[in-house]
Length: 144
Ligand code: NI
Image (cartoon, rainbow, N blue to C red; front, side):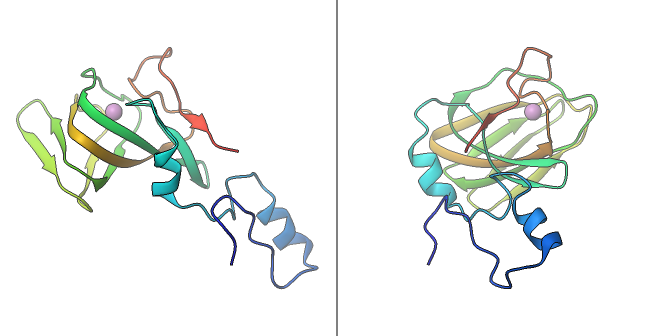
């Protein structure tokens, strides 16, 4: 049984197309346990890329307290809460997400994430999306 972070070998073997797909990057076809990855991340609000799907990144972060209010003009942003509780302050309402609640902030909608202590979130965004909507914002730490 592969451990988290180990490449799952193609069980079929000699198909170049499949081999090429599996070797696309270290993040594709790599089994990864999200909670084990989060256990190693000490910094809060620091997105780490744990997977990819086409031109999207799957990011996770440990969060607590407030993050800066911001907007993504060009993309929606998916949040899935893995543990704890995340509040998204939107212009007209606050959305509160409990474990396994999923919510998509539409593009162009300002949001201020806030979280209880011990909250873990997963986000799905186009690769290169800045965390705070500015060019200077991090696009996520890529795990290897
Ligand atoms: Ni955002």
